[in-house]
Length: 267
Ligand SMILES: [Zn+2]
Image (tube, rainbow, N blue to C red; front, top):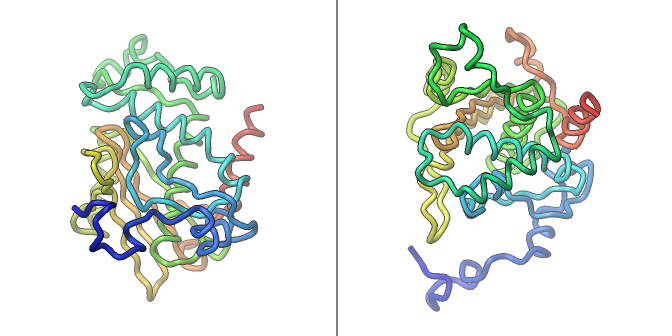
């Protein structure tokens, strides 16, 4: 692994690109099809997802402030559920988790999990760590996945996701049959997983992902997992083809508009 102060490294790799330089290179927001200029260097997945906020390097994307703000709650909620569901609690930072709970209770009380499975016989066979995820949290975690899909589309194709596309964003709690189904579907697209790397920080299994892009047909597949907690499989493709699928994948909507919709439904 090269060190940042290695004199033999090219200057471009020695110093992290400045914020101004980044925005100059990426002038428009990749989450609203360039409708607005980029004003932020946005981390996706957000740093709050990772222990000690140490996310992978080179996962920075141009965002406008509207898209950035519209997705902040989804990132808090997803971070909370990843910590709550992860089987490996040995590395849980209690203080960090308490902060996430406090944020959730203050900012999105409707997204707090139901403690129902203990009282409901139908759930008595489920493993202890499975929890019931309320509708608002479901929408927010789906928004999180959608944002990742748009970000990785920009990373792979150099273009923002746009209204000629439809999106499929599926996710499940790891360890369930649903998660196995997602992994099976994803394996039909890809082979081998790529682990996001960050210098000097062991990300472990916190974030694994793979993307596959079929340039001829314009389909992007994204498979990601966060610890032993959440598994995602997402596809972005041409609306004229995807419209024939059942159930019909949803049309592209910008992150700013998706976030605003969730808030309106739950004032
Ligand atoms: Zn935007």
